[in-house]
Length: 120
Image 1: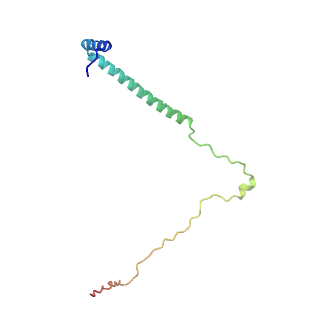
Image 2 (image 1 turned 30 degrees about the vertical axis):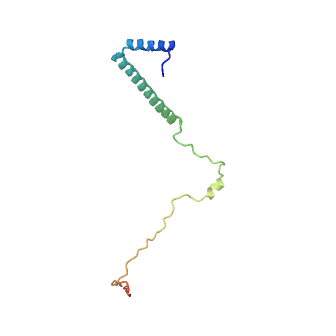
Image 3 (image 1 turned 120 degrees about the vertical axis):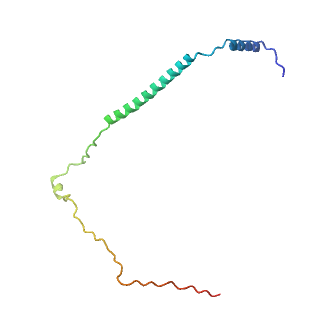
């Protein structure tokens, strides 16, 4: 397909050609300084995030109660009902018998299994 002679196209090509001719790579020191600045910014953000998380954890530890409040009864018990309650002493031990089994005394006799008959 033949190219048409567009004046705008030729101007863009001329600008690109002059840009390529005047192009100079950036000095290594500038590139290194830019990388160091970016690295510092990343470190600062990481430290800030750690401080925010640890500060939030410390605030939560200070604000949360460490000992739960005792449960208060809905009504105050009267003197009569407190004497009727059984004492809450330790439970009495119940004897537990462990069954022991002994093998029967005497000689052991074993009976072989019946032989299979092979009749054809």
